[in-house]
Length: 98
Image (cartoon, rainbow, N blue to C red; front, side):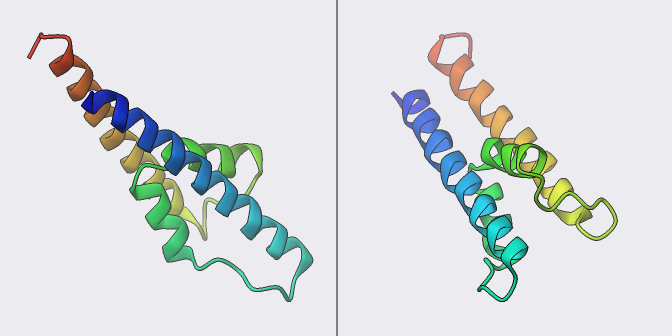
């Protein structure tokens, strides 16, 4: 039950994160429009949106500059490791191994 809820959370957060990256990328291209603050994008990455963050960074091509946006890659990798760890823990716990 907890694993299923976590997977739903990860899916929703990933979609929201990818949508936020897409909206911010469009605003950056058009210029003059209001942008999404970086703290919001980083928070979405941290609270379950790492899959959407990967999509936003590598498929949409947003926040990919490795010199100026290193913190995005760092938070993305760290969040992904933590989220996969939680997923594995819940999966192993549900399977009766732990």
